[in-house]
Length: 142
Image 1: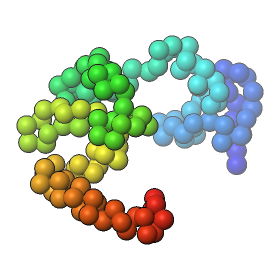
Image 2 (image 1 turned 60 degrees about the vertical axis):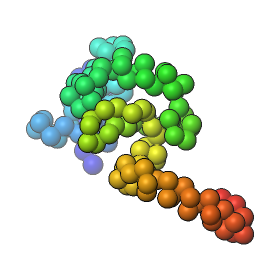
Image 3 (image 1 turned 30 degrees about the vertical axis):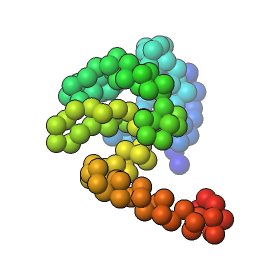
Image 4 (image 1 turned 180 degrees about the horizontal axis):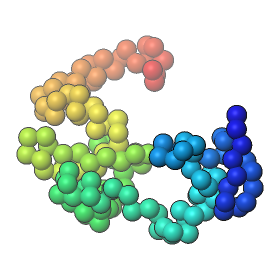
C-alpha cells in the first residue's frame, strides 16, 4: 500500500484515501477523498447536474421538473404499492412509450416481468387471492 500527498490539504495519506482515476499516472485522483468531496460541494452547491436531465428528455421526452410534478401528484409514493420508494423509477408503456406513473423498483420489475399484460397481472392477483390460506398456515409473511 502506497502513500500519496494531497496538494489541497497538503498532507500525506494512504492510497485508500484517494478515489481511483484511470486517466492519471498513479491511477488515483490527485485530491484525497475529503478534499474532493469538499470541492464538489463548493462547486455544485445544489448537487452536480449529471446526466439526469438529458436522460429524462431522451428516454421519456420529459423534463426533471415534469418528473417531479408527476411524482408530487402521486404524493411521492409508488403508484401501485403506495410505499415511499428508495429508488423511484418511471413506468412507461413499451409499445407506445407513454408514461404511466412513478413506481418503486420492485413494482416496476414485477409489471415488466409479467410483460405489461393485463390478463397475466389479473391472473397473478387471482392466484394470490386463491392461495391466501397458505400464508396463514405457514405463519403470515414469507
